[in-house]
Amino acid sequence: LPLKSTIMRVGRLKITELLKFLVACGIGYTLRVLIESSNYKYSSSLAGERLNAVNSISESETVEQTRKRLCGDIHEQLKMPYRPGHENETIEYRFFTLDTLYDVHRSVPRTSLKKYQSNDIRQLLHEAFPLLNAEGGHRFDIDGLRGGYERIDPLRGKEYIMYLNLSRRKRTGKSSEIAQLRLVRPFSSLYVTSRTHYGARPTAHEAVHLILPAPFELVSHLLAWLGDFSKRVFPSARNVQVSLVVFNPGNNSPEQLKPLRDGLSRLEHARPGLHLTQNLILTQRRFSSAFGKRLAMKRLPMKAELVLADLFFQFRPDFFDRCRSALMQQQLAEQQRDDNDEQAPGPSDSVLSVVPFSLYSKEFSASSSTTAAIDSLSIDKSTGYWDHESRDIYCIRRRTFDKVGGFTSSSSTSSKLSADSEAGQLLSTEANRRLFANIVRRGSATIELVRSADPGVYLNHHVLPGGCPRYALFGYMTLAECRARLDRSLASRVSLAERMLGSADDAAAAAAGATGTTVG
Image (tube, rainbow, N blue to C red):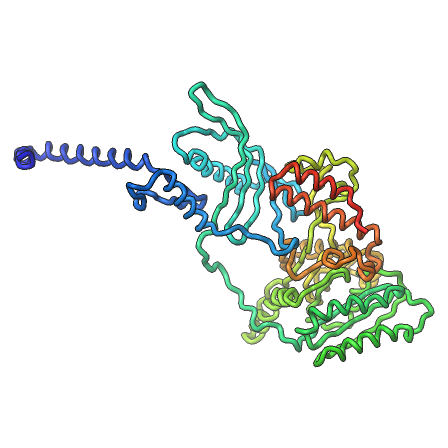
């Protein structure tokens, strides 16, 4: 009866009155849906993807069960955090504020944020606001950002640790507090933006050019380094050309180098199928790694692919594969251009620059006071800036090396004689810095910087027992310098672990112990 009477009343309404009735019903239904949906909990990820609980929640499920289930869904979406298998695989954090960024991979550790970087942080704070008030109600206000850390987790996304000034809303007023908020901006779905075809993997018959400059007094130690090198690289290489540059031999005859030649011959016979070519170069100059490399390059073809490094580094075969893949793109492009008889200029040369590790500055290890190192959030002169004290590694073709000017300064590249004489006065670190500067200034080559901790590059005194082995000291650094590097690298790892673990007391004690450690 009520339904029938309602239908009869609606039938007697005019068209205008009927429209008003329908609009009122629609508004009432919308308000009801909004009121009911506000009683449920929403959990949002920083990717802007909200997990709606309305369609999946059951009437018998409690609020606590709903929260646990939603948190489980989020953890399933974000997967497990990345866990390094070796200390060289540790991913560093970058400290940031609203206007400043402290980058561990820059020569200038403190830089001002660009506009888009500042907007990203502000957007992050905007997205963090509903997460702080996810339990319901408007309980917290973000008053400001004290600072934070960020890094890229290869399995989950971009991680943030933010220290916020918060205001808690209470019935009696507001109270201020500082809170730590850990966030993850998950990766979106994968899609291909560009693809480069490098062709086949480098074959074992392609030549590997090895340049070894050393003083005459330390030539005998080369066999120890070559023994370790051959275990890693020679199994995948069949054609190896070794150029040995001996400095200041004095009145000693080349026959005194016969033990080294015999050792190389034994090394060749120990590897079946290995074709080892030896080039012995003698010079009366004082030792210079840069001059030795430049002198040996003159006998190599222009298309030779070079790995410029020093003898206290160790390599794995996969590192050489990455080097060759980076240099192969230009060669394939040149072949394609020759096949098409194109006269247009080819692409810029490719150079791969690897920074194998980063260390703290000297102020950190030399400081006797440990009070400045207690605060893990402080980054200043006392605790040390991250800088590159390693000797960089370059994968470069000889033609590209000559084109950019090599190890010489821009004012000396016009004269071949002055270039050689200047290279003879350079230390290895300064020579590599000039090479990097020449590549950047000339603009004729595209340089690709690889982040620290390349898995195929190791430092001898970081991975071998005994701290600083004798064959790691080819005049590049003294024993005291080697031990100082160990102290600084240990202090870096302790400070980084302090930030990651978040334990101020234990890590401060560890950092204090690392600062006073003497490595024997």
